[in-house]
Image (cartoon, rainbow, N blue to C red; front, side):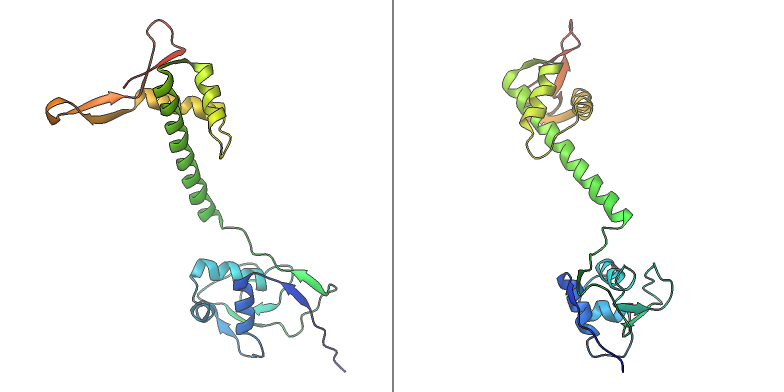
Length: 194
């Protein structure tokens, strides 16, 4: 006599929806069909199905390679022979793939650069003249949502010294201006250029 056992699964909403697609079903579904029925994009579908079919607790069975989701070929069906020693367990979603993580980190770094630049200009606009150490220390102190590295702040200062911006001068002509410059006698002293 085959004994069935119930389990308490701790899953995300997407994982729960995917599992409901296979509830009381013996039919296998293609990757594309699962994504269409769940109304999610391919990247999210890959993460959801990978967690359910390729992780530690394989509550779904798939065709093809055990560890990789192939959207073109893989078929998924419930694992009727699933067993676990645990009555209650969680199935975690995998982290973002490497390409999306790189894009996200690049976007975050871009936003941080803008934040550092804005802070440096705001400090120099208020103070007009500051030494390198005072400017770096004040910038690190004022930035609240992350702690910038002093090397990164120094690079952003150099960028502001080299970078020009355009502004309208008299008679609506464009004039190139700089944000900062070094003092002539002291290279560690910065001057704000309005």
